[in-house]
Image 1: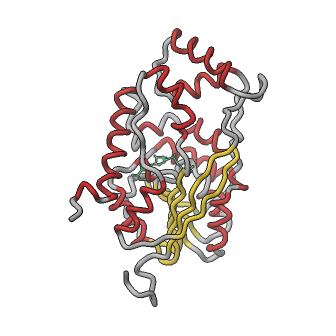
Image 2: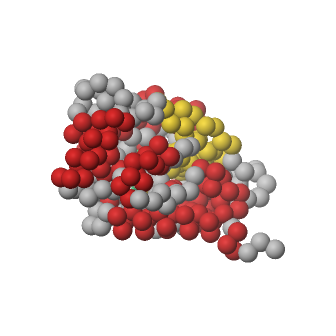
Length: 288
Ligand SMILES: C[S@@+](CC[C@H](N)C(=O)[O-])C[C@H]1O[C@@H](n2cnc3c(N)ncnc32)[C@H](O)[C@@H]1O
């Protein structure tokens, strides 16, 4: 008989916890990845996600297929609002939930600039947030930061009247960064869960979602090697020391492609998974 350790939700918990512990051990004082870490990254996060051109994002296109002007939506872990803000222009109301004050400050500032008035922000972790229900509930690039995936997903499912979505990376950037990571840390990085693990947790909840894997073109460009060093120093959780920066600069000069002014990672595109299901309590549907 399968023991608790065989459950997908237990495996998920183990993977996320080990990964968060490793991250916090290597970057002390930066704040937890599922908490204050995002506060000081908010401006940079907004700039980098704007550069990836959300208007074209397959996930936003998918959300548009199920929403209309009278729809309500909840964006869980909305960050700086790259999905909440464009969606708000086309629906009745969006509730943006996120524990990071810094991320929500940027979202509210951009909402004012864009004259978007139908986004309400809730500064809480989803696990504790009281938002009520909405027609469409979604969460993009958040679940892999959450140890208690089962609870998070059960609450997401219960909050959705018509459609529930997750958007998750379909490929780990770790695979690409692995030689650089091992060069500096001397061991491979603790693996995080993948979208396949998320599907297994959903199945434990009795949810059989549909999955579409899409390709996201990597549009991130670095104007200078210095800019790339700052980005990868943080991605590789390296100390801010002159020797470390010099060594990383030497490696990136070989590894990055393109010219000065438009340096880029060798990864041309990354897959991402759009996971969709009809919530279990939808009227007229048999309970699972
Ligand atoms: C990688 S960002 C994604 C932001 C946005 N969804 C996007 O795709 O641009 C992760 C966000 O999840 C938020 N977050 C982390 N743990 C969370 C939780 N338990 N509940 C809700 N949001 C959370 C962080 O504060 C951060 O803003």
